[in-house]
Length: 465
Image 1 (tube, helix red, strand yellow):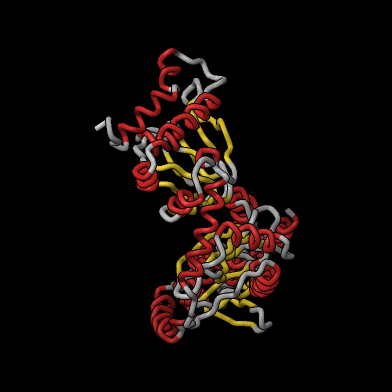
Image 2 (image 1 turned 180 degrees about the vertical axis):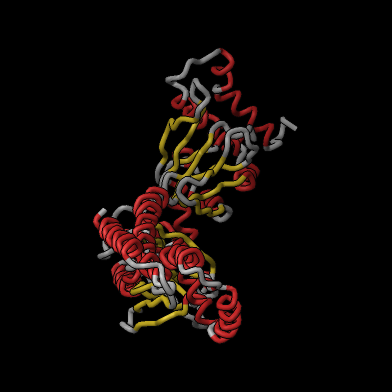
């Protein structure tokens, strides 16, 4: 109110002076006519009060309520110029009684000349007005313009200045900023950064991802509010490319943080015997028979640990191991589904898997967790019946698949194995169902003679063709 009070006080004094002189001076030779300048001065003071009142109502009260922030200084300046111009035109025309047509005609010509001469300056000016009104970024924010990243230092009516990490200041004309693609990283906001790094094909993702995630989470200035994400990006020629997604509140720190993260990756690789991949060409000589012999011995040892095959001789175990398949599953990946057709069983060589069955309300529930040496799917292998449950990997799991052909070769050489297998399967099925409510039909299906008959039928053995 004090800013409005003084112009009104001055205008009141000038009006009193105008009234006193108007009635005191004789109306001769147009003396009273010269008092119009005193009256114009009084209206100029009133104009100052009006402009300040308009600024207060529109920019100090209305703008913050609508936009939630303080009005920019440039907007105040423009509003003042517009209102002053309008009021001064009224004063010139009605108080000083001056014709403005000639002045306006002359000013129009001058405006065209100045507009052509100051075209770029005017573009920057109006772009600056737009930036001040919209305020897409603030002082202290990081922005990226033309692949240049810097912190906003100032925004004037003509230019926008940013300071880079090299401590150099780059000044952009506002018209360029208004036309360019500008990426904004607000200060104090959770800004995401993506960093790529390679890993060798020999290192499984379930080993690389948790190691790098934990290392990145411990880097200073990485925001603790969001857990870093490590994910596979692509399969490159010499390596697997991974992406690290981490969040920072000051984007200008990212070059230093990227360097620190790469440093941590080097040490993580070194501690965990992970080779840093690089483009190279190698000529490897590896005796294939030695590798195959070692793999066969490992498979034989895994098969011997399965109770179902304890009755096999060394020669039979060796023959079975020669025909098994090896499969690797990621955590959470489905291995088999209930109801699917199948003619093979699986032995867990490494890792864990869980068996899921429908509950009373229809949802799947875990009924067993299988580990190294456990097996599943034997009924599909020996009788060809559909899978009876869902089996999914709990962690990275390596499986040996024993297919129908392996068993078929054994039974062709020794038919007595069919009876031995049926007895072992019946014992296992009885243990699995000992807590379930059995029906006479289920009891019959679990009898060794029934299982033996189904084995003979499935493998088309003599007497069952």
